[in-house]
Image (cartoon, rainbow, N blue to C red; front, side, top):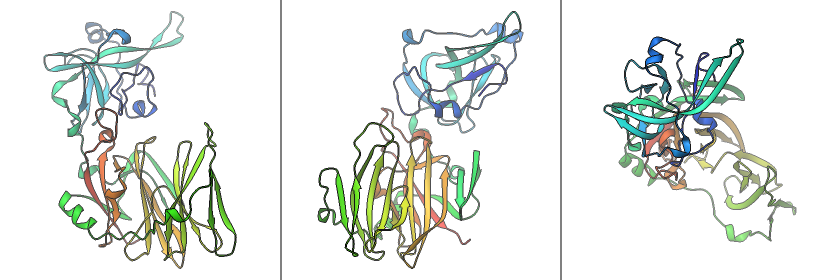
Length: 366
């Protein structure tokens, strides 16, 4: 993405506190950039290139102002603006000058040669942001306005995509709740999965599940280091649906599939662990996508042994917990999950964050 025709910024990784020489794809995609032109002001505050290997990162700070923070070419309000870091951006701090914090980032600058040809140079530079706009990671939280912003949805087979985000104003009602309400709802949960995993164990790389028609469902692991890699495990079965549950892990993805115990046909493929509503009429999965940094929800209608897709959405600003026990379908008909803002999903040390907020989702009539 070019910044007008002048400057392009990259951002440091959200999930790793160490310096990296490669720029993450998701980092640059978050940048809200504004162009500047060569002026006398730009001459007063020239670019500040730095040597990456000789520059020490003192600490990390995060943008805690929801409006974001402008980064400038000097420690002055009159210095040229290079762009804006959005809320939650993790910054590598390399210095402090009064009310300004110096951070390191990769800047691409476009130049015109003597013959008018276009050239560009990307290099590490020192840039400045206002100290008052920065803070620690625990300030990166989900706000009520964040909850229903989506980047994609599929309803009855029709797909829609929203690169800059779009408010979901039907199908679902999403709200923040307190921990006490969350824990009270969790006490009402029933898990319909019968975990008889010892009944069907693997023989080496082969998992076989006997069917009522006398045949077998066979899954074979592929222990290879490429896109054909796969590994399968038996999770248990659902009596009311007469279905086996099998988890699959692949090169860069995973799923849970339910197969009919009578003849082995595929009933449904889920993006993650399946949760059934108390009345067994609905199934949902919630998944944190680490590649796209989205929270993915799938909802299915269960009717006469068939599982029919209803709606799937990808939330832009928050991701559900990685802990299965903190995600469920309550007896009151609501979906519950612990969650974090996408920029607070990873902890300071690069591991998954132990902090969380609590989200409740209601299906609306449609």
